[in-house]
Image (cartoon, rainbow, N blue to C red):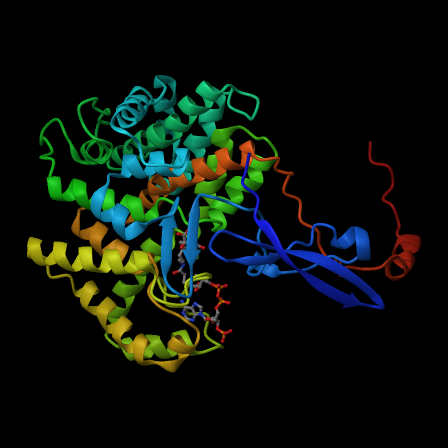
Length: 440
Ligand code: SDX
């Protein structure tokens, strides 16, 4: 049962001669909200908040963000601690189950992920029918949704054991699908997951191993991938997690629900930004004039936006971007890689952090600004960058789905304010309408 936020005070709303008292609730970190769940019944009024920038859809115990202070914690633990000390599988367990695993819990969870890492063999043939050049995010969302056909019995009525196994399938098989999609896209034979490799080492091996050129697993690449996956693992009610909660609230199959999260994440304003950043940096590099693009980003009449900059919640440096920037700089230096796109990214950040347009709006690098440069250096192909984000976010989506089905969640069905034609505006049109002669 979800721990409810406590009522701590009241708000009085006076409108059109009516006065209504609404409870104010407070979360464990001091966030407060006016509970408007009785508003329409008592006043006939609803509220409107495009993009829900000021509206909470739920109470949640999974992730806490303080956008003004640049704080991000999973189940209360700062991501800086998690990125430095634990593995991505530990963080997946933490997000889904609420605490870090004991040694025996870690072994059980790793075994469950391992036993559920193989894609159904009949699903392998699906890859043969995607058009050449299909974006891996579109392949991923299609294949994840298809899992609902192969594993249909995953809904809110299923057993706890089946939910456990299904959540492991999401976290593990989707990783296999991602690697298979990449191999198919380059015409190489797929590489199966191995029981003797860790989650991240397995993914790198499935991506890069080849019968003619065995992949030497680099411990540093495995460590880096753990860090990158950890910092992307959850981010409270972002667009794709909200999609997962909305689809899941209709009690849709878990895999169809996760497929919706993958689809939402593919957008360039959301997870697709990490690929868009590299494309933008390359365009700026070709042009050579960084200042011109800063001017374009500030110009209200220009649709150009600095990709990887700005955030709905963070109005200071995204703590994840801090971690990625440092890892990126260290890895490129240690690898002797001199990437001009990193120099351009640094230049953009330096200019923006001195410019009142960005500072006044709280526009700083977000998680996507440096991630692609690091993925590039690690040999991850650009069209897989957002897939990497999706793989990392799987435990977060699964955790929110489980939290939601464990609560007495109502189906997500927001209201609207209708601004279309009125009956009087259409009556003449209907009266004068000449129906076509009956076509047999
Ligand atoms: C992710 O929500 C999450 O948690 C998402 C995420 C996660 O982990 O799940 O953190 C992952 O999606 C990160 C964001 C990746 N997207 C991008 O990097 C795309 C570029 N960023 C922008 O499109 C924008 O900043 C958003 C979409 C991220 C946030 O948009 P908002 O909150 O709706 O902000 P807004 O558009 O209302 O902007 C406020 C002001 C506007 O100027 P004014 O009208 O006040 O004059 O800031 C300006 C905007 O024009 N602005 C930008 C800008 N982002 C906002 N100006 C130039 N460049 C930008 N990138």
